[in-house]
Amino acid sequence: MRIGAVVVVALLIACSHTAPGGSEPAGPPNTPVAYLSQSGARLEVVFPAMAPADAGCMHIDSSGPGVRRMYEWYAARDFPDSERDRSHFMGIYVVFQLPDSVPLTTERLDSALAGLTIGVEEIAGEPPTRVAYLQPRSSRAYRAGGRVHVVVADRDVVHRFLGPTSDSIDVGWCRRDGPPSHVRVPVVRGP
Image 1 (cartoon, rainbow, N blue to C red):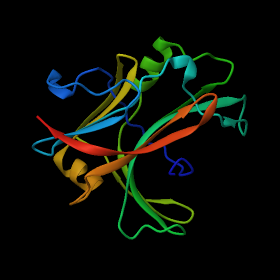
Image 2 (tube, helix red, strand yellow):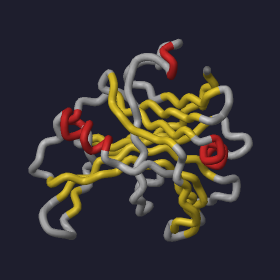
Image 3 (cartoon, rainbow, N blue to C red):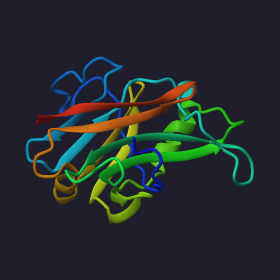
Image 4 (tube, one colour):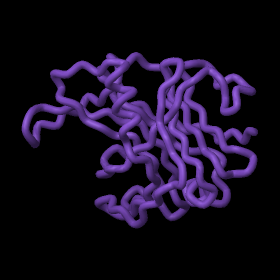
């Protein structure tokens, strides 16, 4: 799992019950999906539906002033040389913190997502260290239908993230009252 990596990069995701372009269902609301445009220039990751009150990692950061809760959604792809004792992966992260005493409302979540910078990182080694940072020409995160969507639109960045042969990626997200969720999902080619 890539949650331990220190990442200041955020990817935001738009939520809806239709695929990009509105042509196909995005699947059940509790199933994450990843769409790649036919041209390979746009990747959209759609996370499961979750009420804002249920979001947030169990981990509380008390290292600085005040107690803060982390909120995180991510997509990642391992390189073939990645091993248990030597990580090597590409990651797209949506990460922010709020004081733990402040409830995450729909408005706060939407505002936090809209204010994040979205990028793609290559991470390697132990401890995991940033090797490269890629800033897409266009990227955004948003919510629709209770789901967070992360969109990266830049052919070169998307190709570097997926690599030449990736047909699936790992996606993960935090839940306030449980361990982080982490699943592998196929990359669906679409319009």
